[in-house]
Length: 315
Image (tube, rainbow, N blue to C red; front, side):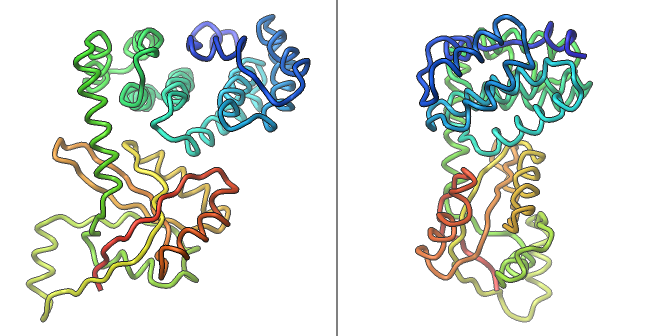
């Protein structure tokens, strides 16, 4: 298993530079041991060394360090290590802001994991997401990963995204589109169903299974015609935890937070381009201060980013 994966794993130039130039809080000898073991292909030794050094690193380098730990674990040839690497990668993706350069590196690695496991369509989705959040210095590596995934996956969306990598103007347009998605995700959004506030009305019920509540325009019109009087609205504070182009990423965040007794909901928003965003939120809260306090106590220790938002809700 490990040999095949090693042959097909593409390591980014940015991470390669990190391996030799990053500055850490941990004693240099510990990091040097991890680096030396990795370069020499001593995967188990490297993985163990990174396990020690990475947790103590500053925020600016901790994610990169753990990504090297994941790469080492994935190549030991031990099934349990490979599984651990995959779970750790998913966890890093959840906690990382898509605007950071390392996010595209994580999604590229995710695509390669899925490719190795034979999940070709999922690999294509992850790689498209990597391209959408990438920066110019990552283009060369993305092109290599594109070639590997396109060889197995049949995805018109991936083909178009990979083609854009050779076109600076197209990449700029994708970056602008990504920025627009972020702006829309951060704007106040009105849930399109009366079921959503019932799930969020009582914080004590937030341990229930999260669900996606979506209602089309026609369904909303039919609901209005049936009701005797128009639905009223009120606003409540919620914490937005992420806006994902891939539903499985939103589901993964919700599932992991549920294990920590933090219940979230997912709302679906379709952009003018037809692209769907899956938005994860928790709440509601009576005031912005209560929302921020909750995030500081429950989410910050988990390295989960949050943003308080005033969201309109139907009664």
